[in-house]
Image (cartoon, rainbow, N blue to C red; front, side, top):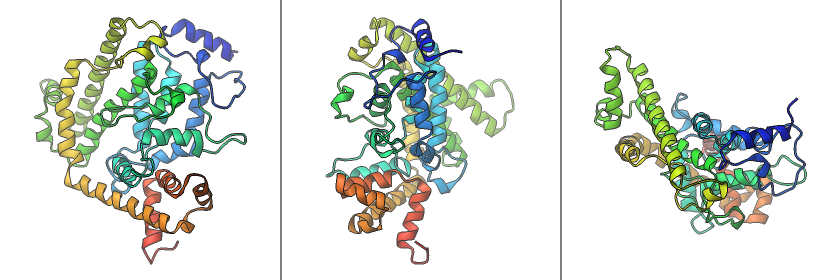
Length: 385
């Protein structure tokens, strides 16, 4: 039988000195007795997986609205893909796999329906009422909105997991953190930094996959992107006679692999260059230590520009996005004008946090499918309420 204390001792022996050790967690907001067999981040992982918000990720989308096709990525499948990339990286760097996996599982938990379009719509509506940011919303979810325990609201996660959620940052977003308890001026753990880059690797490569599958991306145009062309040529030169579908998967597999390899090697070098010995060194460092090499950053730029031009700004995607924004705006307006139409639990929260924040929380928690059904119930006279 292996008890928690022995597992914690193994961490101290096996993990890098600058990794985050479970034994030295800053703890939870509400004190709880330690578990006999599970370490702190293992318990956090279970709390995330069993949460309502995590299950709803199955029907929240990123680029394509849920009903457009059942073969596109959802927030849940994306999250699981991020988790697997994260685990590959942290094992090699000797970081805390439980912490990194937990942050990865929770990193999108604050996203509203309809992907980035939904977030833009809510941010616009809330600009004079505190704004909307999916990282901060994720923190609200785990600190306040999930109700599963008799003695406190939220999931009462550890300090380090909450920090990783709040400080999640990619090339698409910047974190905006006011909570002084989470040390907004210090860098997050290396485990959290790995999640940030793994998220970027996942959505770039998998948006390519979905874009090709949907025929919104032209294969010939994609071949003009040097990084893609170089990998593609490597397969065609071998005369393997692969089908288009298998070729796509193989190129994307290699594309993920070369980014992960570059990230591991460059991050290891950064740690040496900055003489990182402890987690305090990580937090005080002026630069993020988990990063691509300058060469890889330059190679990735044309690929990102291609996605922006050919997928995110494709007229069909713009139509989906604008339609989604209208759904959210009209739902928000009708709830604000007639809050009596909201569920009783949300009506009660209006007295605590005001109508705008209560409605924002309610809509942000919706799946694509639920938001569409709610829209029909409220605006289509032929649909039962």
